[in-house]
Image 1 (cartoon, rainbow, N blue to C red):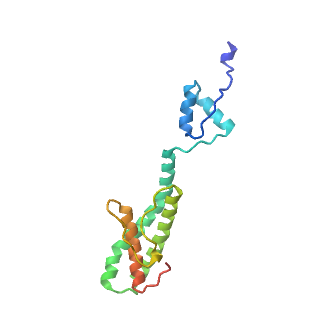
Image 2 (image 1 turned 180 degrees about the vertical axis):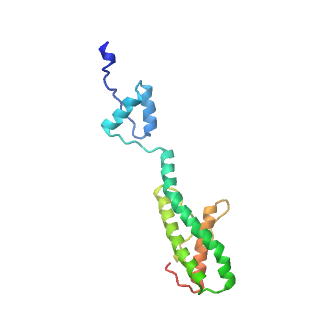
Length: 167
């Protein structure tokens, strides 16, 4: 009767190609408990493959704040660009402000691109602003491609108008 209260810890060999959740389900199916599972993980310091949902959540948490900042600059540039173009005054405070926003937007774009690559996502499409000319990407159905095309087009146009840019 004493054996009921002093149960031996369960032996379990995890599959590290599976997520923790999948291993936990397998462990539970052998009659284990969640308390025993937590003790095994702690004792053995097991690290499992990350769940795709967890990866997506981590990606979104890292990507979204940077992308939102990038998007805010692009939207600001887009709103003010037509005013600058209509004025034809490319040596004004407005043009200086837009140019600075272009630099900042490009910095955010580069950060977004690094995050995409880190998580194995397809990077936002466009061409390098240093290339000197923009090749219009296929933007149908993909608003991100439109925004990248827009910012790179604006910066290229500024450079082509004689406004010195760092890229």
